Image (cartoon, rainbow, N blue to C red; front, side):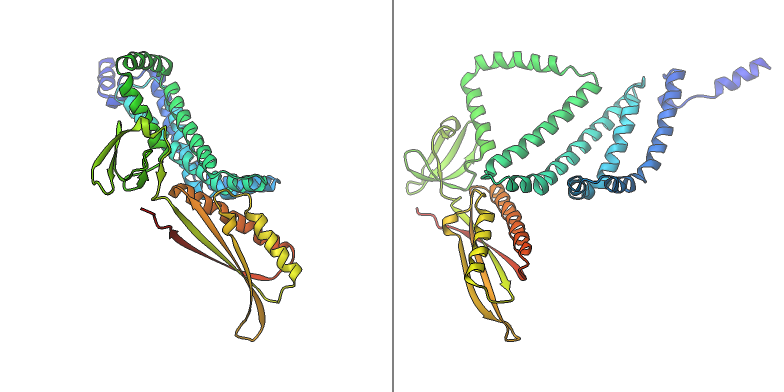
Length: 377
């Protein structure tokens, strides 16, 4: 009888991926599976739980942050929490070789998921909160510094994810960086000039003073079209001569470059229709609100800002006042232009709110026209 029971015991085999686990590990893995099932059921309630949180918070600022930043990404946040919890339960288990690579793959998926979601939240927070807060501080706003702040926030997020992945998987980042640093020092002594050229090329790539296809003035005032930007040098086709100038990036990064292709601006027109005639004092108030609402935004040519008042008659023969404000938004790159347009949109909302505070009835209309200034070649 004992031999039969032993034979049956030998016939019952564990799955191949559990064969090397100890009994404690098998029980732990079973607990992880049950916890995963529980997390899946709990995940269905996460959106309702997140929506109910702001009701218990009385701060309007927290409610606004929730609605503008977290609410649009509820589902992504939900699954990110679930995958983080599952990976956190798997990390301390003594997994067998077949299961350990799967956990590493899951950890990489979690890292990518957290990075993508984090970048979205940072951009959402930057666009919907930081720009508004910066404009409300009554300080002159430098769009380039705001872009740098967003880049540093995204960089810090990426470094944090890398550090968390390394710490949870016993990767010695200090030793790795030290070994790379020692090799880098030896490489720097062996090829100092080449490394210098590459570093200056990285500076040009990050700063982007010009791109392929741009017309630029070189330091000797010769005009040319950028044909290629390499790791060591930039190739510029000189106008008139049709010759190719190869300029080291280390030189271009330290001299003044005039980019003619970026001599562009965006004209933004705002039309306000008031359903009554305006007194001179009211016109002065409206002009003051519009000027003050945009005076702190760098990148707007305030000398060219135009505000005109004109009476008009609607189809019902009622007299109304048309107010048109024209802004000239300058920018060197598309990202800078987009940021300044975003700042101007926020300024418009502030102007509208201040007009409404005076109980002035009006209609609002906005038109954007892209204009590229001609190049003088």
